[in-house]
Image 1 (cartoon, rainbow, N blue to C red):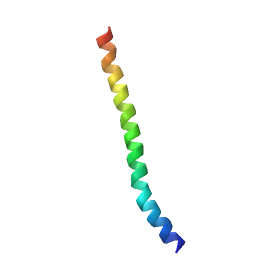
Image 2: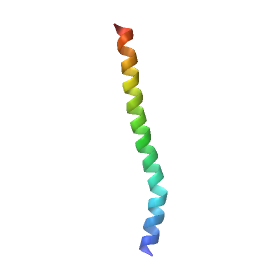
Image 3: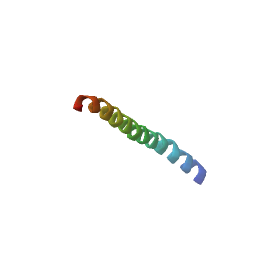
Image 4: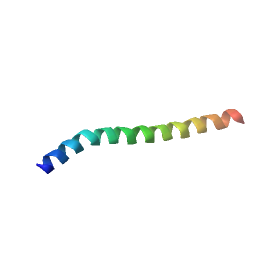
Length: 43
C-alpha cells in the first residue's frame, strides 16, 4: 500500500520538479546570452 502511494506521489511531483529545474537552467542560459550580447554594445 505504501509503495503505491509513494509511486503516485513521485509520478505527480517528478514532472513539477523537472519543469522547475529546466526553467532555472534556461533562465541562467538566457542571462549568459544577454550578458554576451550586452558586452559588445557597451564597447
